[in-house]
Length: 254
Length: 271
Ligand SMILES: Nc1ncnc2c1ncn2[C@@H]1O[C@H](COP(=O)(O)OP(=O)(O)O)[C@@H](O)[C@H]1O
Ligand SMILES: [Mg+2]
Image 1 (cartoon, rainbow over the protein chains, first blue to last red):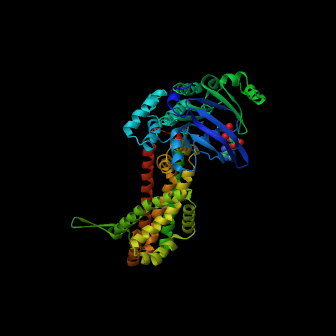
Image 2: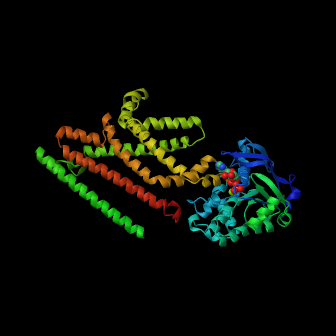
Image 3: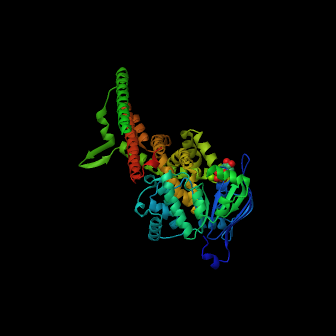
């Protein structure tokens, strides 16, 4: 799903992560010499067994976790000790969590508007207009005045996506966005994600939805024990996996 | 709705217990006063609250004292809330100095009697800082209750799901904005009940400021007792007034709570 932007932008790699190491107390090696590059407009799906370091990688990308060594560059900005860089990256990278994490004390409109006003400095009216537009895009225009607790899981996750999009991010991270949902609600969230991919959003998606990986992604990356085991186009990955371990994994989940 | 009727029964039982206790107390006092040969003079009490001369109302000393008590508690309540919140944030901050400062303050206050703190402020600090008795009283109460309020705030803050912080972080919100718009609104709502108990403690503890001759409700009561020996009547009246104050306070908080809860969200503020 290459995007026209590629020709205009000088830098075609929007995420460059090199030789990342991350160890949790235990010690648990969550990332071991992990390197990956994501092109602008690309949809990268990361799969792997539980505990393989998928979430840790996403969380390192927006500064929720600190890497011990290695370098991360997002849209030309290095994620280093410079607080301005870190803030810039937080603003440019949107994240959708497994557990939605909507703000329960705010209604849907405020959930989507809050950061626009506080971080982007938009007026209440401006933010409101933008939020309503985004809510319409995720099919929830009629829920603006509802509170999160009044929505289904699928609706909450769609609000969470709208909330992240409201910051006009250049990259969107999805950490098992559909794993907490009842089966009948998974489709509505995947549809929104697919639509986003078609619009050219750069996305890094951790998911167990192999149908989505097959149809929507440009590249699939399989990781285990904090390392990249195999990566390739969905065609290569699903039809002709090279590694024995990948074949075992696919057999288990397909 | 099972739950509703259950609470109604509990509160009915509570009221019954309360009335029983009150009856027992009245009986004990009756017996005690009989044995002492105590002469009741309830009719003299209203004059200490309010007198009317020539169609003009005059506040009696007890009402004057009540106003002072109200003033002291209102100001120190606000101050205690501010001190409590700041201390809680310091304790949870990344700053080592901030945390040490907060812990030092908390441990000092919580491990010494309020009376000693009042005397310390009055006899040691007040002359140095040149502050009035009233200010001394307000500061002593605010710092004392602030320590407890801070622990209450802290418990409310740490109870908020980590995902709330992470969502705010990923949206680019600063730490301060996250506290202000995401964490505190949820935390404060959660700790409203223990905060109310603490506020009621403050009302009651304010009686101790009479020891440094601040003319609050208790001090006025002591003066009247000394002059008239209406011991039982005056102290019962004071107790009743403090009780009313406490009840009014919890009623007020209940109203605030209901207002906060009237946004249609229900599930999340359940414990
Ligand atoms: N905050 C943490 N503290 C300690 N260990 C952690 C923490 N977060 C993740 N881990 C460990 O790091 C490893 C990778 O975790 P994670 O990135 O969440 O895996 P995945 O998302 O692929 O399931 C796991 O072994 C997990 O137990
Ligand atoms: Mg995970």
